[in-house]
Image (cartoon, rainbow, N blue to C red):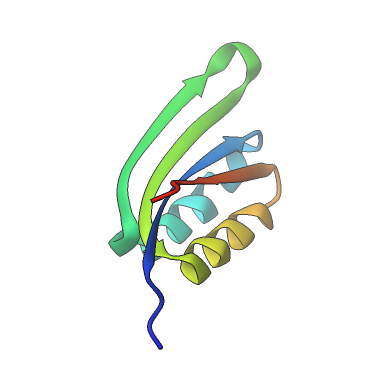
Length: 83
């Protein structure tokens, strides 16, 4: 049985710039599910804030969040639309 897609937004905080390449590789792998992406450098605090809008099955969203969360120096939280 195929899962229904969900709309979600991931908030990603990058505190370790050395981890950016690994993050970008993951986001490229999941690119078919990404609706939009916005990245904001916050030089004052020496970090980057990235938001990713997704349209994907719940398992796919969870898998991506888990993989991102396992990258050193990166934290992630996901919010889901109620529709």
